[in-house]
Length: 79
Image: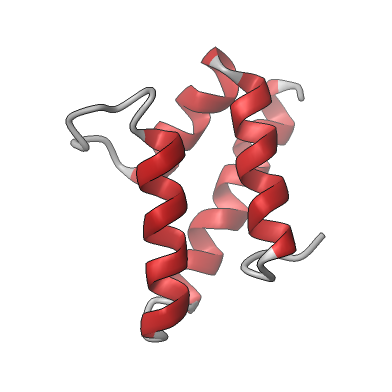
């Protein structure tokens, strides 16, 4: 995935997370995925999720693609 698609996808995920934040179940699903995937590029958990997603997409694109796929399968983001 090229940098433009990585940033657009990370933004789409960020907006979906904000939109669903009030839903405790969906928020927990996002948090679990963020913890699993974003900890690879941000082990201390200090980065903004958007920035961590962009870093993941740049550094470990296969993991970024897998995270996006899981989010789509869980209906957290559209296909």
